[in-house]
Image 1 (cartoon, one colour):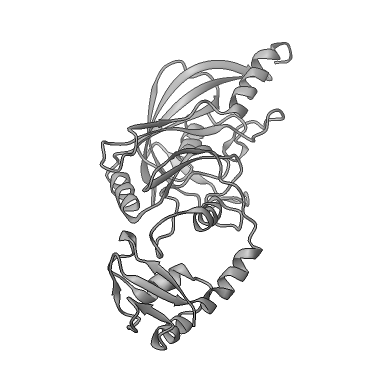
Image 2: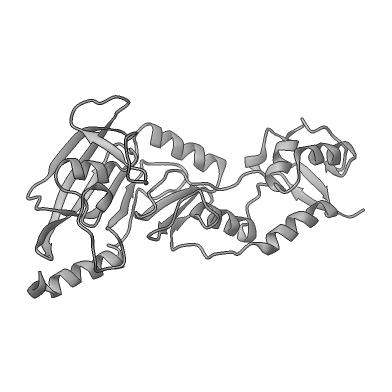
Length: 318
């Protein structure tokens, strides 16, 4: 019988053999994995072993070729979408420029599926069990920087600095009204259980509310303009907390909803390619041994630039 041979990598170390096989070949059931191991169709270092065996870095894993038949048949049916623009990548972290109107996870065409398919078909990773995943999230209609893990070490490092608030996140957006100087918003945000709009929103308040979590945002005005007689301000948001819809809900609370964000009281846009403009533009990381750069920053998005140019060039109609 022919076998395919693989070498366990660092990310596989101390993981049970059955767990690794289920990660590596997710199209077979756990009962099949147990049967194949018991019958010697999956072996470690050319020897039969148990499903509970803790794999070590450098172990040779042999898997009967026929086991891959279903996996390859399923893979052939997948439609592989190209990755969005890669901003940074090394062995531990992948940072992408997420397009507008793309879910990070939760659908067949979500970004996590695109990254996983790319990883499985193109990666030269030495791990059988590790799969990349998003390390944080941004909303469907938010564009810009989003980070994915490429190694267990990278995932653990990112989780730690995220937990300890050692990552600085800056966003770019257009809000309604004029903000003339830097402002600091310290509020509380909770899920809006009474929402009747048919889509998920949160509620923000300057006072503590039931189940509310603190939200801290610094707002720096960059320039002002008008859209159809509506004054607006291009602002940079620096958030110390990462609550759901934090920027959108706090902006509405402070009488500066995002221009176009009708879910939070903004006026509807009839020009441009987005409902509203919110770009995850800059990430600042602490010093690290993973060779992640201290600052990762994007240029102002093309869609945002085009919208601002439209406003500048159509003053007669404002």
